[in-house]
Amino acid sequence: MSLEGRAVVIRQDDVDTDVLYPGAYLNVTDVAQMTQHLFEGLDPSLRDQLGGDTALVVGANFGAGSSREHVPQAMAASGIRFLVGRSFARIFYRNCINLGLPVVMSPEAVEAASPGSTISLDLEAGIVTVDGRPFRINPVPAFLRELFVAGGLVPWLRARLDRSATVVEIGGSEE
Amino acid sequence: MPHTLAEKILLAHTDEDEVAPGDIVMVRCDVVMTNDISGPMAFRAMEQMGATKVFDPAKVVVVPDHFVPAKDTRSAELQKLLRDWSAAQGVAYYEQGRGGIEHTVLVEEGWVVPGSVIAGGDSHTCTYGALGAFGTGLGSTDIAACLASGTFWQAVPGTILVEFTGEKGRFVTGKDLILAVIAEIGVAGGTNMALEFVGDGAEALSIDERLAVANMAVEAGSETGFFPADATVAAYLDGRTERPWTAERSDPDADFAATVRIDLDALPPLVALPHSPGNVVPLAEAVGRKVDQVYIGNCSNGTMTDLRQAAEMLRGRKIHPRVRAIIVPASQRVYREALAEGLLDLFVEAGAMVSTPTCGACFGGSGGVLAPGENAITTTNRNFRGRMGSSEAGVHLANAWVAAAAAVAGEIVDPAEIAGAT
Ligand code: SF4
Image (cartoon, rainbow over all chains, first blue to last red):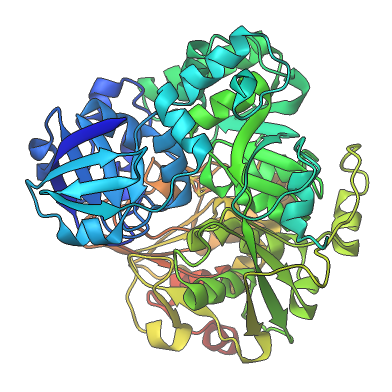
């Protein structure tokens, strides 16, 4: 699975989900409407930089705080195809994976990227390339790759519930 | 093989024979909780998974608490959806006026027992660690999977042992203990970790104070945080629940990722300055900062213990003329108990505004959001930029003594000064 995108860069560390999507809009359930409030507490002008092929490059502990899934849902709907960061906060990281939005860690790649850089991600090879320079990403566990390939937790689980499995197993019957 | 408490709990909830930190396992939930924010999105994802019924209606609990009471039609629609869905699925539902803030409700109503696994559609689900449960906060798609299958995926966390020793001072509370931990390890220091709170200082804490400590484990980036169950927990659960449980703790020779020691004898009240729960200073360094609003409430510090502390500061005194004080009991039970004790009357007499239980302004929803340029001191758990309203406002996190003292003084002050001033 190989993806390519143009970099939009948020360099600060510890960016929380409250600034990424303020609490006042948590009663929005329409994803198109959510995209109108993405980055609102951080820098709303970042929204204008998002295209259909964005690679979001971020600092350390990105997505700290609230479990609000509005953030990665709005990101995916705004054309962010994957994220490369120094590190991610736990629930945000889970939410991205569950939505089939690849999130990988490579501090070196973050260092090398600047706004507009061309970034490509090869999950199988474990490589992210920034303007032609390859960097190794932190290993992604097999199960998380399985989720990315399935397109997220919804299709992954639907396939298992379809087979009316009573016990959900990682790897399922493919193994 | 020796195990940490986190490993023991997860082992008991998977089909694996052995677990080690970093392993990804499917974990069975004893309870799945959701609210008016994560619920509607989770129900949609559950439908997309092709599931029409929850895995076990007896293990699902729904608590509307965020935009409660409904502040606009959109919020009302979400709450209606929640109510209708809960009725159709036959799951427990705590209607407004009969519940309160989700985490307080689940603890009070006996849903939480030691050693259980609770998946909640809210990051502060780690609060259940106060009773020795593995409570973990998840997003809506994860919650959908829990509702549909009763399981979620989880990387087995390492454990940071947090040892509280000694005796805390009069105006030091659970809030200060966890702020000290966050100051020590940082807002990402608990990433991929569970925090386990031990030591004589931990054992001496009441359930209310343990709730405050466990609640903010997520503010250190942790997967969860818990106290091993003891006699205090057993006494609290007596008559409250019929769920079976056993007290477990980490094996002494288990492999801990790190140990953090906090000496309570030397710990002053602490304040987290804007705009991070990790921006912690001793109270003395925050003294003199003017405040416009004081907010006492939330799932960490809206308990009877907190309200009694606030009442001691406000008894026979007045809220500073320049200040608004908003007091929000965390649940209907707390509300009624405070009413019976005369605390609510005392607060109103002092010039405070008393709200019914709600998340309200804690997350900037409604009922006390801040204007640009304003400063607040609150007993809540997050002071991120814009968390409580304007991104040009500043929020200070502190315990209820310190927050209530500031309400009287109009600025951050040592509660000892207010107590001594009569
Ligand atoms: S009181 Fe605040 S922190 Fe607690 S659940 Fe409600 S919004 Fe979240």
